[in-house]
Length: 114
Image (spheres, rainbow, N blue to C red):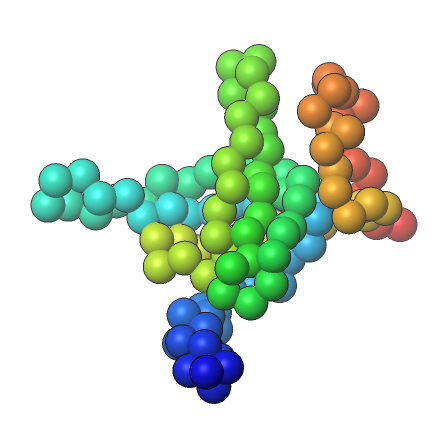
């Protein structure tokens, strides 16, 4: 039984998913279907969490839009994700950056690597 599950998860894993970590600022290109047309919409923000493993792995991206914090959870190996580009890679000293939800302005920004 586990051999069947291993085969199914191996098929669903996206080999072109780039390495990124919590704290990175990423640009996620999401493929959106509108009627009979496809388009790619970019969501640019900071990765505040990664959860799961294998084919079930997800990551949470947070950004500020018009003064309101917006968070989206994306599956890493989703067929609807066109690309994930790492824009900035600062140092994060925690596995989950949920504390950034309460901070505003420059305090909500992580420092670059030194």
